[in-house]
Length: 399
Image (tube, rainbow, N blue to C red):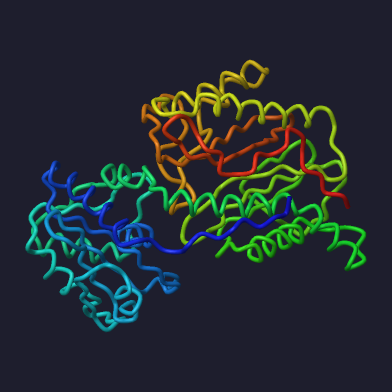
């Protein structure tokens, strides 16, 4: 308990990116796509390996062209990103001085795209456009073409993680699991050192945040915590400055990052003590997770995982209509949530290398909710639990 896991080597071998690129190219050729243009941090990092904190500047578009024929992506980047990109495996890099309102890299991008006929961009669910919409419309007009949606192709490539990717996700899952386990002592010490008689949700989350960073997480973009009696009305909000109350439960959900890869899971805490109703609800979620884990292996569909959890929870007396909408898990990787989701009738089959969450949630009295989540990687014969399994009962915070 509270033992920080050993660190994994950061970054990837060049062969990792070459394998991704070749897989994408084979699908591009099969679909008669000559080039793909990506603009987001996640897609550009996935195919190039570029890391930069300057992504936080919204006025700097970055472009990566992925040709169906060739041995390297083509980077079209503002000059300020050059040193970051030149350290990657990308061989062809074009840059411009930015920002330049009259032509912020557009003519340079058009000149590199005009040699291609059929051009694709991600346009589906969970995709984004990190460039001005007016510019992409101008580019299509200048090239006299409309881009095609390649979201399914890119999602298919990103879905199956390499062992090196799984190592990073396991690392951040272990860091977060240990921090969750140690939170009770952290909170106790904080109260004692500061001579407090009460502590707020925000102070608890701040202590957890510090613990995560101290144990090796790079950043914590998603960390929420909310407390209430017998569940919570929201599992994505908080924290606030109200003091937590003995007898309440606190749901804490964390998505933190190690070497660009996310974990995403929660833990439930009882403040001093819990009652039989909420204890049973928490146990029902733990058991529903077990139902999904029991069938988590190659060949099982994402929809099967949904059915296993919902069937168990409906059998425990929870409203069947609650499970018809929403998801009971999802893929993870370079994004906090990735497709596919664990939803009804999702036919995508599990394969070795898929990393996902099992995330049952249930409706409680007075419009409250409770949720439980674990992260797993699918192996050749079953699954590997990447998180430290939550206890059947709550973690307890003594205040």
